[in-house]
Image (cartoon, rainbow, N blue to C red; front, side, top):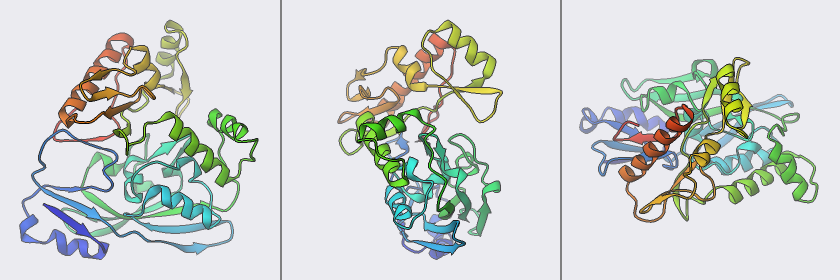
Length: 321
């Protein structure tokens, strides 16, 4: 049963409908980070199509921007750049809508959206109460948040972003400087960084409009520093990156998967992308359960070879990983 919401203020009335009282609810945005491992969802799928953005306040150094959940994320990156705001350029071309950004705490090329979120507006699906959660209440972590830990309990209706007007250009990801150089030595302005990110993503990642995929299927494993260093000493060439604290390091899930021999592997139409080992693709008629089976096989292989557990990034509906 689908329900389309064009005005978030109508959500409480929708949730009070008797027909929904005993049905499971699921909020579905663009569906870019979801794997349905079931042929049928026996519940109500809610889609929020409210999609406006406005500057709430501006002190000349930072602006507070309120964005409806249904606003296309990549279009929002351009909207902020058009308004002279910085910070989101490294997150260009990530598919999905603004409402999904805090749920996953989306991140790419050295930046996570949680750094810029001031608050998230929600409607409680159990009580229909509305709330404004400050960033501190969102429990942001690596591809994690309180929203992800309690899926569909809080329906995200809008986000507030506190964005600077200068000084936010982030070139921590080495490939960005290299890409700017390849683009003719462009200066690292926010708009040029966004263009470089889009070029990298289009070159490295399969287009979901051509081969269905949910982007990176696995999180990069975060291990105790000593464990990561020990693995790096055993497996030559293993890349290790800093994590959010000095006690931990992050491994490359793509490298682990590729070294385990999965890049380009296919089982029918369920496949590991030949472009990027971290992406599972549907070459045509693969089902959700078939893709999930492949993901489990990949994770089991990495666990056997390296002793490292892989966790999925997408939400899996109808099954557990």
